[in-house]
Length: 225
Image (cartoon, rainbow, N blue to C red; front, side):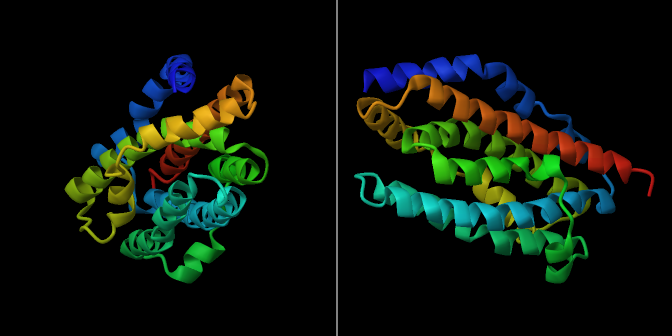
């Protein structure tokens, strides 16, 4: 799997600047300092409620598309991991005074929902190699910020373990590097173009940053309320 390992490392290096920006993003920092109001925090579960429901459908499509490959268990695991997300988001919303109806009625921004749109596009159009590489590089940055946010919500806002369960699950996500690299190698062997893997991964990271930028902007809008 030397070709896949080299390609993944090359993409990591290509995207290290945006990865650094994600891990040092000012939105979790603002929460750590207690600068985001409770109203401002509502944007996170409000958006994630719709993102998670969309991602569930996307991941179910991935399992359907790739169920006949040797990596079926990986795609099944991705879907199973996402199944707990809506309940965890609902618990976070409840802590902020949001009912399930509030979450359903929450109007997402285009920028805050762009990641889910990319996930849906990838589920329908991208190869398994593209998606596996994108998740491999994207999930650690997402999980890192989820961990920062969970700790800050407990330390600054009095959240308990149930309202931060959604965040904690992603923060503790185990590595799946070996499987993802194997899927990338399988894709390369089948003729998937390396540039396609580059492109899909880059877009996932760009939309990830767009999400956190949007949370920061919406939190700042509510800072004076």
